[in-house]
Figure 1 (tube, helix red, strand yellow):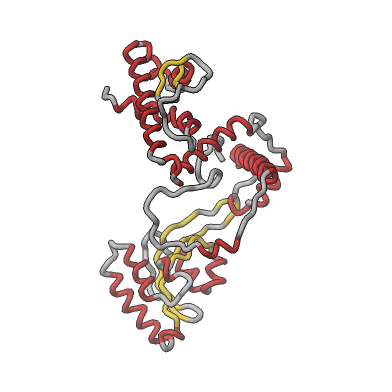
Figure 2 (cartoon, one colour):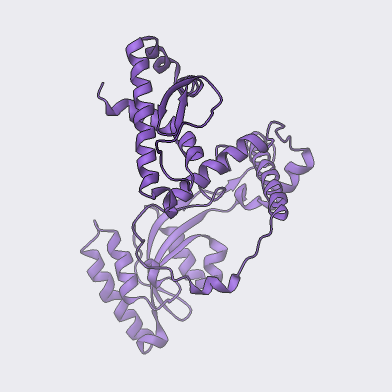
Length: 332
């Protein structure tokens, strides 16, 4: 085992400890170590590493990995890695790294996780009632009862934009001829839509209409369009020129969803879990709302107008607030 591997193994277990020790105070000096709770094991500057901390770190390891520390040499190696970790942490504080936005964010995340673990009571798991299940089922009926749907990519040639129906048909036929030479390249259809479609709502997405049922397609584009869409059987299969209400279309099938017709009884176990999760999330939100009321919060919504979203992502990892994609340790 290399010297670096144990450091990597212990790094995650030590992260919270390091964050708790991080502060705006200067790095270790020649001053006497502060009084600490526990049995001293090693002293690094003004920080004391204790036997209890080492034991806690080892206890957090999987059973098979814990067994290796019965070897005195491995135990000493673990102490060495804790010392090395603290030395690096103190060097970082001496460099002011603990004051950077990235590290402050990491510290805040560790603090938030500890607050949730220590203060949020989620031991009493919610048990949905029959009424809870019925209400949730009806509010989300589209998840359980829906007709067959297809996902269509289309390129639209509008009569008004092409100078009449005949010219629209001619443009569509010319485009289809080019597409026929690229049957093995389904992405070419999306490129065609971006280049030539007269439908501004879907042009930038390659003509993607997303999943729609027959009635929705009829309402948006007419009977002929819906008939042609549902006749396509295989993914990436293309239609001929389809005449619509105010223009003509080329269609390509991107996906198909079968009709769903599930009663509450059909989905009861899954529905119960889903409602319980929602109730748990609602409980967590109420708890955070109570905390928010405890502290003075001022939101300057007008400042949002100063944020410019770049087309390409900025370098560095994205930072997501707890409860919006980040795991806070409680499934929130």
